[in-house]
Image 1 (cartoon, helix red, strand yellow):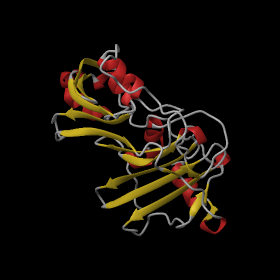
Image 2 (tube, rainbow, N blue to C red):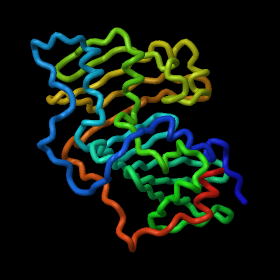
Image 3 (cartoon, rainbow, N blue to C red):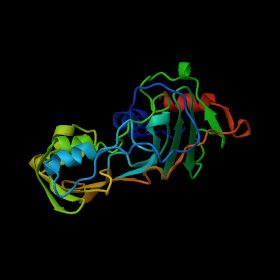
Length: 272
């Protein structure tokens, strides 16, 4: 058997650290109604709030319209769609193993009562577990880690912009809907950047430059933190994008013909 690295074996726990939401309610399909009240309030010329307060109020919450998200440059990059009002979400992420070279891709589809998963390996090397191509219906009793992403829908702020802004200082508005400042990612532990990278950054992690944008309805659309090179880590950007508010389709549930029960190989993998 090809040995999985500790990082790959811990993917479920790492994802859960970034996306966990407790909640109840029935899942649904279709388009979110655009008649719902949008989250946040649009900044105006007479807005008495500070730039930081505007950013903090722009973060999507459990009342936000369905939207698409992507998180890049993090310890665990991911993309997906969240409909917090219907407790429905789909999250996709992948991890590349260097030796031997292959990529593990995982997709998690969740409602308040059910969850499905897909796992693929590219290329499908000998020794890697075989997984069905259909959606696998997850039996929560067979998943050991009850904080697993296969059991819990993501929170409304999967990019953890709340942590970026909570640790922010010198925040200013640079234009209509545009903001900049510095943030201390060392206070986020390893929620955003890997512990090893934070250690390499040392004191540099205490004042990292960031920018953010808010749309005309007061909703956060992007946040980007510049991360300098440190140790073996190259310079990069932690980039969060929230878009398509109210215009993104709520994830559809798989038809009966497109799903099967999760296999023993699936449970061996997620419980490893």
